[in-house]
Image (cartoon, rainbow, N blue to C red; front, side):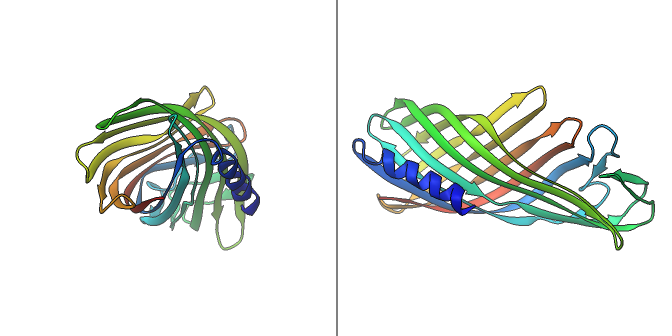
Length: 245
């Protein structure tokens, strides 16, 4: 993780030398609620198991940091890091084939779903007025994910780290000097999977430097291949602080 963040920080420092720029950072925390979280391991021969319907999964806390430079020409270059870990427990009401192992009906099991995300974004604002800002760009995402299922005697698991290109979109209505409403995020689709991560909410500015943000985030997506089947949807209740320098 240190190498990933060091590379992103170096990129930001390089771009900060070109033109006037404002440094923006947000610290966000969210309560995360699972809508669905379905897995099969392997994807072609495993048993489909829902971490939300077949097991019990409680809401969790997820932190996120976003930081970058907004240039006058107008361009945004920044990075994001977020962590998500959920646990589920319960008694199986069916026999489950998972990672080459057999978990029998009636067995007490626990499961874990981890989805950590690191992204680098370049976004151009094609509309940048005093009341409306709209932009689009590209995001390079590094996904570090893991799923597990275990009983008292055995454990099946899969870890996966990979890079994914995403489309970045941003829309902000600046209602007044104090209040803005915004929608932004990343998304992509392919025959093998999809990913959407979008926030909708409001900013209240205390002054030119500090603001509080609150809103809703949707995280949805997954993959379907021979190695693994996993599709999930999570709802975030978000609150955070934004600082501009």
